[in-house]
Length: 214
Image 1 (cartoon, one colour):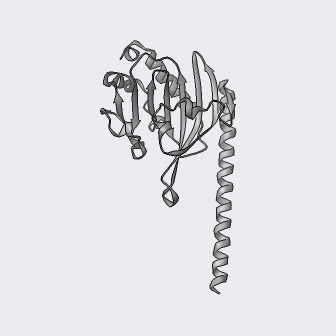
Image 2: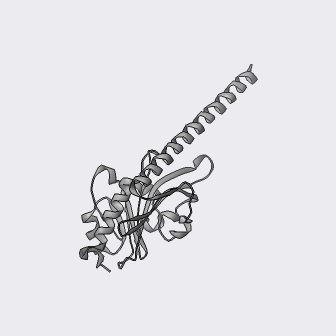
C-alpha cells in the first residue's frame, strides 16, 4: 500500500514538473515573440541568441558581475537616432541547491563616449540583491543609493521620470556607455519603456547641467 502511494505521489510530482516546465516554455516563447515584434516596430534588429557576447562586452558594469551562471539572450540592437542601443534579457543565479534563486532583468545599454565620472544608481527596491559596489554607497538620493560623483547623481536623478513603470530602474554610467536595468517579475514585459528611459537618461547626460560633472 505504501509503495503504491509513493508511486502515485512520484507520478504526480513528475506530471506537475512537466506542466510547470511547459508553462514556463510557453511564457518564454510568448515573450520572445513580443520582444521581436517590439524590435521591428522600433527599427531594431533582433536575435534570440547573443551575437555580441554582451556578458563579456559589459563585464565592467556592476549588474553583469552579480551571482553565477549568467546568461543573456533576446537581444534587440541597432541605432535609434544618434544612439547605438542594445537591449537584452539577463539572468543569473544566487545560491545553490534548494536555496538557489534565479534573477531576471531587462537591460538596455546606450553605447557612447561619456565625458563624466563613473556613477552607479542602485534602486532600493532591489537592495536584497545589490552587488558589493552598491552595498557601500556614498549616499542616497530618492529611491537610489549612489556610488560616484554626488553632483552628477543629484543632477541626473532630478530629471529622471518618476512613474510606476520606472520605479525599479537602476542606472550605471561608464566612460563607454549608459546601462539601465530593472528586475523582471512579469516575463511578458517588453523592452520599449526601458529603451525610452535609457534615451531619456542619455539626453540628460548630454545636457550641460549633467554631462559636465566630472
